[in-house]
Image (cartoon, rainbow, N blue to C red):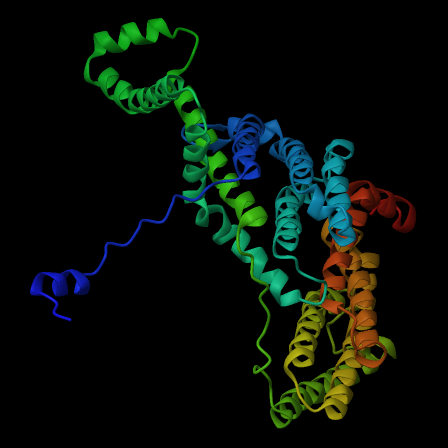
Amino acid sequence: MYISENQLSELTMEKPKKKAPPREYGFMEKLLLPIALLIGILYDRLIVRLIHIPFAYEWHQSPPLRSAIFWLCYLAIFYMFFWKRLKHDYAAHFVAICTIALCVWNFIFREGNSEFYTITFLVIPAVLMAHAMWNGAGHTLKNSEGIIMSWLSGFLIKPFSALPHLFGSLGSLLSDNNKPTAKRVFIGVVIAFAMMVFILPLLMGADQVFNYYIQQMFAGLSFFTFIFHSTAIIIITALFYSFLWNIGFGENKTLSVPESWSVDIIISSIALGSVIFLYILFCIVQFTYLFAGAGLPAGMTYSEYAREGFAQTVAVCAINLLIFAVFLRLGKGQKLLTALLGGLLALTGIMLVSGAVRLNLYIDAYGMTWLRLLSAWFIIYLVAVITLCSIRLFIKKELPVAALCGLLLLIWYVALGYLNPDGFVEWYNLHMIGNV
């Protein structure tokens, strides 16, 4: 069959590709728009309103208390929106209850306890980020490294990566309007307002008479304050929409350490063996001078001995537990590694007892303070962590020890707050030591 040149060129020509239809946004994605706006308004009224140009915090107005109110509102909104996913997640409920307890603490013990008060101001959003990302990525307690990576991405990535979907949802919402005239009017008003926000301040600065009459029109209302808070609401709304959209509708991959990552048994043995040998020498000194009560070098008192070494001892104990976690996760050669890690835990326990004895000597000499109470409370926590690590090493191999230590740290912190730190310090110095 004969094919002409024109027919051949038509056959060989590339057909234009059809444009993919625009993405359709579901009802829940559109519902998230007013929800994010509500969160933005609450954030502005409860937190941003404490900021005054030039952006100075008025700390006497109690940002931690207002922050607690905001996070309680946020948590309620979060649960209502994601209830179907959350209702059977008991670990998430535990974290939420502890967070509520921390928020309520601000109302009960807001007088005094300034150190705990300030720390809690930062702890609450950090805990709620873990709660949200745990829910969003569908982590289990065993995937501790995935929880940590998701927590970091919740601050650095999630509030920004879904911003295009904010405009997509808004455009989809407007396109659903069956009244084209009303839709065009709405769009025109939005554009006009956006233009006036930027043009009007310039005109007011360009002509003093024009500026005077505009200010008279808005007497009693600070125009720039209105613009500042409106901008803050828009920004916070956008960030929370992106964050919540990622949790509810985005791809939240479960991250974990690749199985190929491992530490050779020879490397593990040399590294852990060297550290254990050093700790054995340290513990010999502890048994000689601290536990057995041998005489200290000339010019050194036991209170000075305790003060100089306590913080470093507790820090080393915490580092040891981190070393334990790394080698337990990446090490190979079960029997030898188990023996070395067991020795590390035992020596860590001895060092922790040393730290407790030092702290007791220090408190007897100088009295109880907030930092010494925090240190004693941290020692109690580390004892519980060592116990969990021992159970994981020798009894129950599947125990999600890292996640349990995180949950234990949260309840430990809540319990410390409800101890009423300042009140306890005052009571201890009065009754246990006597007017120190």
